[in-house]
Image (cartoon, rainbow, N blue to C red):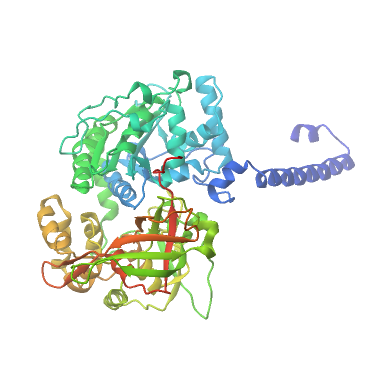
Amino acid sequence: MTTILETISSPSTVLTLGATTVILLGSTYYLVSKAASQRDPSRDRRNGGSARVVNGDAGGGAKLKELDRSKYPGGHLTIYYGSQTGTAQMFAKQIASEAESRGFCSRVVDLQDVVENEDDAAVEAARQDYVNITQKELDEEGALIRATLSHPRYRDNDDGGITSSTRSKAIFFVATYGEGEPTDNAQQFVEIMKGKSGIANIYKLDHFNKRDSGLSDAGNSSISLDESATLDATLRDMYFLNDLDYCVFGLGNKQYEHYNNMGRFMDAALQKCGGSRIAPIGLGDDDDDLEGDFETWKDSVLWPALKERYVKEEDALAAAAVSASTKEGGSVATLPSCPYRVEYLTNGSAGQVASQDTIQTSSKHYSLSVDCPVVTRRELRDPSDPGSTVHMEIDISKHMDVMKYQTADNLGVLPKNDSSIVEAVASALKYDLDQRFTLQPNTQSDEAASTKHTLPFPTPCTVRECLTRYCDLSGPPRRSDLKQFAPYARDEIDRKALLRMSSKEGKAEYKEKIVEAHVGIADIVTKLCPSIVCPLEHFIMVCPRLQPRYYTISSSSTVHPKTIHITFAVLETAKKYGGKFKGLCSGHLEGVPKGDVVRVFVRDSTFRLPKQ
């Protein structure tokens, strides 16, 4: 445009061209905006119709900020998680918290956000980058994955500048849900990877022995596959992720047939798509010691492998010194970084209701569940028989749009903490139970620059509702939860006790004093460590979420389409140091009389009755 104007001498012509330019730009903006609002509905369905930028300025056109390699000699490290109850996410965040001192600049990414990346510039750049590398076209779903996993901002040159090539580094924490299935937030990612890797049947992954440490006996070799597990070889894209270095930790339970199926699938699929394995897969067994498996893999396999491959000894020492120096000068009372900021509502302000796409994928059940009345309940055991087993019927007629079910589906029940426990916690931490608040992103937190802000539960709500419905106050906390609460203990004895039980050396004490004694977060803040002072936003950050309990629906959807029947046994046992422990959800359901409501949702089951 500048060249053209320089050659034109008539001022009227210049004004005419200028006006025309403004009109054209305005028309272009309108057409682009309209096109964006009418984008492919298959993408809009993934996020409720709203566009979300996951990686900020992820397009390939902007100049990338150079990473300070004196502080981060290992370069960038992205940690992805597929989580149903939050444990995989917790492990991912733990790695991120240790990364800086190890010489890596980290970010944590939900696998759902990978397939919901609405940064069109980044997606198009990923597509073009793939074409340049392979001379082949890339479909939309593949471009979505590469836009995050192979984003140029997070690729490094790790060969000392010998070549100009750059690679991404990634760690995947992947939980297996139910009978070998992906978690809700990993379903779409897994489907895409099945096609790209050529693995059609995720249940045909060969089993291999697992050492007690949770490590693969296969070393750095890939997990082998049955022949029936692979698609036509022509569908496999061995160059799809050939610029990715990766490793995987799977979370599973040996009580299930397809133990750690998703972790093993992810490890195999990434390798078949051209990825280079950094370290052997780690497998955690929740039936034994999941956290112990994770810690052993983390300390004995993951960090040593990353250090050997990406960080020189002298650089590691320098990075650790820089990290330590940035944390010096703070007092013992300095609080950890928190991604949330509580905004209390006053003067009757209603507050902005959080939209569905701002809720963490692992917490979607909080906003998707509905209150349904109990219409029938009866005790199935004889009065002379100790214990209680209850048959309950729930009326779903007013919510058929979201509660329609098929026989053998699962009913998710959202339990509530007992009001006396909620009041005790609020009293100990000096919370006003009737105060309403919203959660906002804390732009000053360490996570703000590297992760997208999402909410752990819907707000606005009262503090009472937060503690009653969203915080697990009664279940035994994991050792890592105790470690997170330690900085908030003002008494040194309390702080040391929490840190001791959270350590590897304190596993036996933790098992005796926490797990076997049925001690929950409420007991810790009100009795065991009463010196804990924890602002509400920090409590929300460190306290485990209250998870739904699933019951197999015992009614026929054909015979009883408008009611759901469940049968449950009330869990009740004596506490080691006196008193009784009652199962949170079964105890909650036991206390719901006929006519009152329970908060529920339907979860599809893979089990189906024969057609005939």
